[in-house]
Length: 461
Ligand code: PFF
Image 1 (cartoon, rainbow, N blue to C red):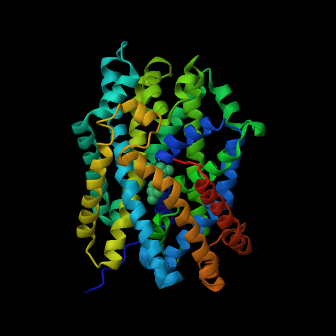
Image 2 (tube, rainbow, N blue to C red):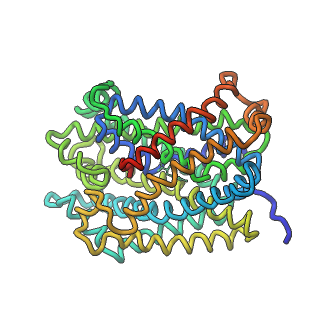
Image 3 (tube, helix red, strand yellow):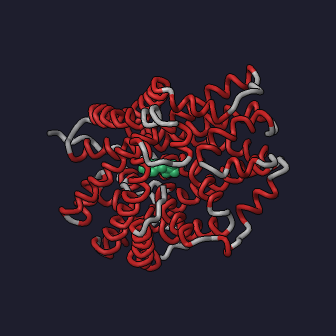
């Protein structure tokens, strides 16, 4: 069969935007604020930042370099860089993309629902008698609505990946990311003007180490994989479209910095709103879903300055952030079919997108038959949705991340990794020796600690 020419990012900026788009998603807007809340802010945030720097950043560089050197998707990349048996590690990543996308799409659908609703509230007024929890319960329990929402999202994702790396993924990221930044800045300005903002900043940034538990440290580590899209080959796949003219170190630094900034900004916004309303703390504290989809909608319309405009903008922001993440998940599976099964992109996208959607159906219907709110809010382990999230967060990403560190640190030669990182465009602050120390020792030890903790019963989902 004739080789298809490999697609590539048009520039360093294109890669940084697309990869940042992958990294920014529900992890930043949904999970991070919640786990910061659960772990009582301050010290947890510092530990999280340390994990991002000590584990996330070196692994980000490792994934990008494995991708660029091999010029293949995750399966071929591991095989070519570390040895034939490593193709199984790559397949683990493809499977992970498959599962993660199947339930991520469902939450994406919720953001569409709330966007649509908030649009109505902006023009028609927020109903005074609306019990927000009931609205949420109704929508997740409505099977046909769930299917329609997730189908719409899947079609959008497939539609972008269909057009390829530069004309689909990169172009979309170029449009969406700036919009996302502008919306976030507007929200931040408005949130900082609220009475609770001082308390929120204190909660997030004032270290209170006495209150941090050991389990919180491990949760921070697990989340750093999820939020940076590491541990399943997404950044390997994106790295395979980087040209030799670009700097891996600079790109990795920018992606990690943007992702972290956005997570912090989202948390400041949410907590400023929450701390501005007396008594809301206890109510919100119960679940992540509660914060994003139950408490916030009402607060936009009752508390927040310019909330009528910012409400719909916020849910559009969530939907857009999620779209750039689902695109990257689908690209992992698609690029496997293109590189290893020699399919044409269009066919590969349809095949992988269609197959994943079958599992999305299971995820979307996970809530229908059970007492809906208690199932999700308490994170009960029923239904495909919860099982999938549990499995991916607890097992797949940490083990995948460990594999990346071992492949880059121990199986690839020093010469090979050095050529990729010291590519002539690297920034002055970068020290190859430090990276190698982190990837060989620090990152594997930290990840093993998570896995051990999971085995001993710690749940990160
Ligand atoms: N980084 C995304 C988030 O924070 O929501 C989640 C994610 C997307 C993980 C894509 C992995 C991935 F390949």
